[in-house]
Figure (cartoon, helix red, strand yellow):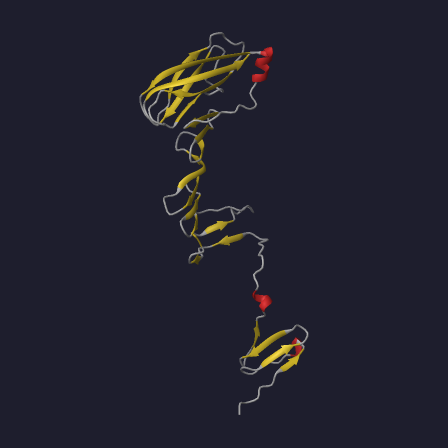
Length: 254
């Protein structure tokens, strides 16, 4: 005949150390325990195993976990030391997805191919920020406050004094030009003269209008802060291929 095992019950505060395999139930906390001779081991209830939402109220570090097929990082720190949250290293998701924060770029890869530049990136040495999608690249020149497009696109003007000029408070002039671009990825310049001089320095808007073969990445711009006068302006270009650069310009002022 098997040995009989006593089933203890009572309040948790009065629970003694249980013998090996001795069970007990606490009537005040509704918990089950099994003894191992030196301690009481609590048995988990189903509700204890249910998934719940987890909230981090303090700064957190993710330090090189290696969950196979789930999530891996390369010692990413979600704390920049000043109370803000940041990702200091690349954040890799299994299955080929990656968010890369190196080289002043944000790269997103959603398959097993090489990471593709996405959202925005700082082009080396030129001070550009570009936004890419599958069909177009928009370049914003931070040094000269100009916008250009690769593979076409529309340019929407905002906060320019164009309404004043159209209503008689100034004048709008425009024109076209071209010059030979001989060295790829280097900046070249040419000068234009306004048909009618302005009384003060106008605002210049310019852009690329063709001439180069294939589908180049090109930025045509002017520096409104230093290379524009009441009588003319300097037009600049940076392109990835050589050839004839055609451009248009619009001057708005008084």
